Image (cartoon, rainbow, N blue to C red; front, side, top):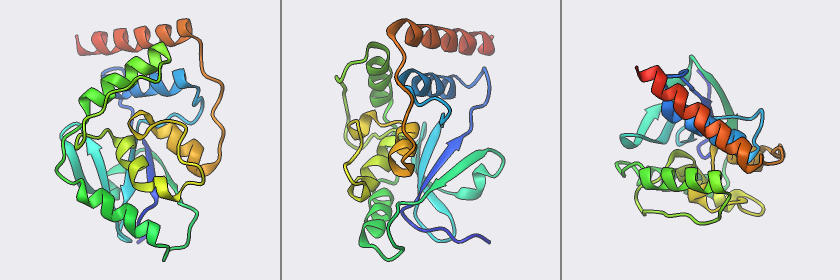
Length: 193
């Protein structure tokens, strides 16, 4: 059995193909922002040595075993601080305190709009995080300079870039972002038919 460090971040690529419209939109957003090869569709915070995670899903913020992602590509990002650093405990406590909150549908739509039109305008509803927002708020105190974006605009690829030091690719232009959004939406609609 693996031992995990509470406070570390789990990145997941659980894209389920053309019928996975939410995963498709997240992948499109990651590519539009310029995160390139580091496309992740989900993130969670590890809160126990046994691998319990706290994650924001469509049904809200829940606690789950990390083993639920055994069949998909994942990456664990270390916070880069010792196991006994109090910021790790804070991150885990923060995430656990968010259990049973709702999912940030409005934050998700606002993020999609800001990616498409490359604006810094965003909306946020307290107590309704998206997955990467939950993680960014929990671990922000551990980063050297915070994130490039407000927590409600952070995506899983941004967590990867900030915490592992892998620089993102340059962002795409408007027409490329629009093409990705339209093709992803069309594939999602056709996949449901």
